[in-house]
Length: 159
Image 1 (cartoon, rainbow, N blue to C red):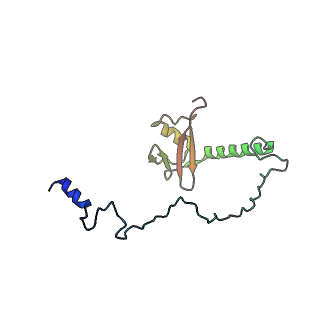
Image 2: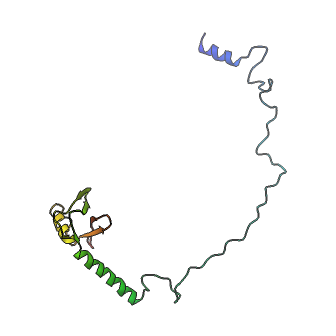
Image 3: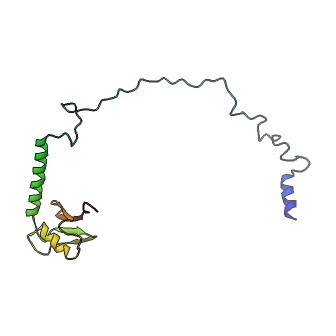
């Protein structure tokens, strides 16, 4: 039997049943009429009530009616902030670390080679292997709880 004959036999149901494509609804598989989904119906769309919009809350401002930004801080606040930064720098400069501390840099962890080293001495020791850790371009982040020092290299002002 050839392939053409096989496919013709599939679609030919015999003389008693007729052709499948001529009368598909004879055996009750398909309904005689199909509802049109695009046909207009008499049912109306549901009505949705619109509620009032929530009130807009105005942005809070300080006593003088200005937004609180860096530019309108009082001079005393600026002086106190700069004093706080200076004391933190002095504290870090005088801070001593021992051999139990970890230094994390360049995917490696080191311990200081000596006890009672300052952060600048640690930086100088690291600078022997990593020349990018110069005094001008390096700052030291310190986590005292975990005893961790992270040297961070920053770029220069002009690139």
